[in-house]
Length: 166
Image: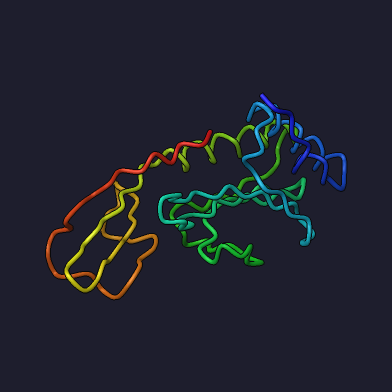
């Protein structure tokens, strides 16, 4: 497997470097994550997409400052300064032991979230195509919709995406 230094070399402090080093080890050195340092805390993201339609479906995010570890969805996909505490996937926990153990917790959360199945629902007629992506177990809440509101009927096709990245 190819060794990739990004984003592993961006840590600005010993705790950030230890956190990133453990993530690197857990991900087998695959460059799956992005790390961002434009906020006081380290921000690590993992993007889930539908490559067939070049659509970003979820941006999973963990913030680490050496004191508190926070995680959740970033629906803006723009690394919004704060996360929505009302998001059902949001978590916040103190860094009680080591930075490496916090990285393990973050990695497990990323793995659990990225393995949630996503369905792409497709409707088509002579004039239009509508697409909607849902987390399969919460199908009433679309992640992303393409086009106007789909027809009021069952989709013509449902495709289960393989979004497992970790």
